[in-house]
Image 1 (cartoon, each protein chain N blue to C red):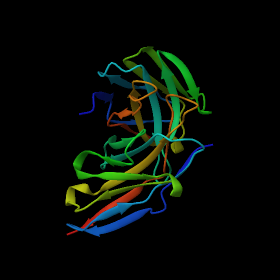
Image 2 (image 1 turned 90 degrees about the vertical axis):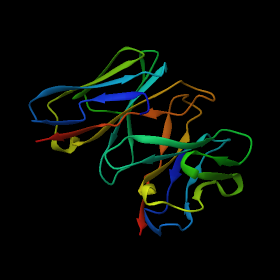
Image 3 (image 1 turned 30 degrees about the horizontal axis):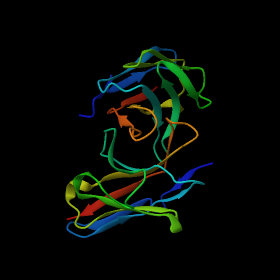
Length: 114
Length: 114
């Protein structure tokens, strides 16, 4: 069965610093991969997705993620964070056995230091 | 604004009450979902509907009863809930399989069971 691991529960970075959030997945074939962001009291918003093709994916709000099959990873990056990036970030993998099902990681909470 | 609305945004109910959560999507999608998000726990998929038919029930207690009258509307009927059912309930929709695979989330209903 598929699974997603986000090893970091909470990360704090300084405003203007670079960011990398880790995501590892377990999946037998080529996965569908997603990153979502959730601001306090809000639903989840899709940042970016990977289905196939170029392994470096650009998303909204200046985020990007790189799919590395050899490492079973899909890490999220941003070169310079803003205070408004403080939120919870979720990595997710699609379940090919069910066209509608996505499995979410437990999330990484990002805090921004002024 | 993701095109998925949920009402009410906040709900406090006693253990003997009956209430309903409503979700509406304006995206023309075919699939709709209910998730439960509790503090310090991963997002839990509860129900999936595809073209109004329930395709997934993740062992959800019968005190939660979903209803999908059409592809745009989804309800979650609640009765005799327990305090541990207090959580953020998120609705989502998606086009289905293939490239249009990502899920769009509503803002959620914060439910408190007293």
